[in-house]
Image 1 (cartoon, one colour):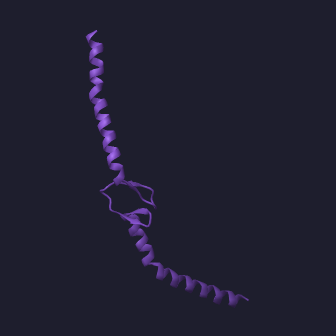
Image 2 (cartoon, rainbow, N blue to C red; image 1 turned 90 degrees about the vertical axis):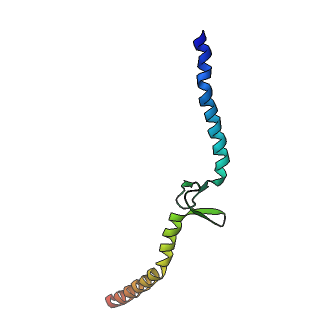
Image 3 (tube, rainbow, N blue to C red; image 1 turned 180 degrees about the horizontal axis):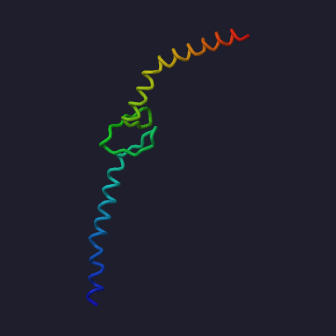
Length: 93
């Protein structure tokens, strides 16, 4: 009979720890954000920027910046490609 009385007491610390963890998670979820591009959930350690109503992580911002920095070059290549197609297409006719 004493063993059955000890069983609920053994579970009490883990129950208390579980409640403590739930309280911590509820408190910290306000500081967690989901990146609008990669859909990962980040907490304080990963720098994030709010753009409009959405959050974007630093990794996605860096890749977006690299893409935008290369946009001028991409436009030049696109125009050059169109001119070559017009020139080659006109020569075949």
